[in-house]
Image 1 (tube, rainbow, N blue to C red):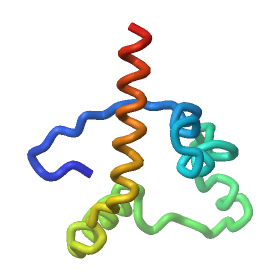
Image 2: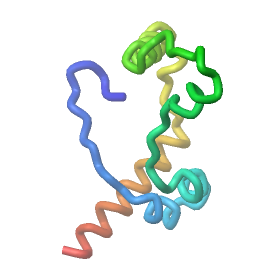
Image 3: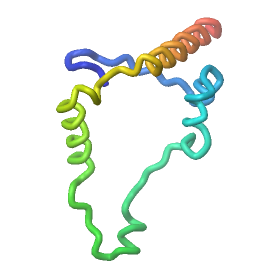
Image 4: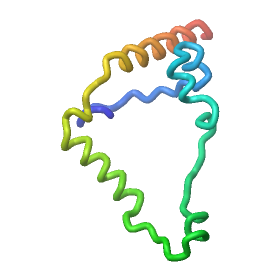
Length: 100
């Protein structure tokens, strides 16, 4: 999450590339998480006819953001993860440069 007033630089790096650079991170992205999916409540509503969502999606997202903002410990940067991401991004930039 970018700090307020900072525009993030979004970069798409494939899961396969991430796995090639860092197998530990890659193993969490491949397999059943490799394909995008949309989850809904239709099956739950069929099985439990009285089920109704009480809070809409946007409400839950807002709640999550508020929790992050309220507790500074939830916004701590993990130095090891930060290094891994930087290593992956550097490898990606080098691969793109070599391909051009």
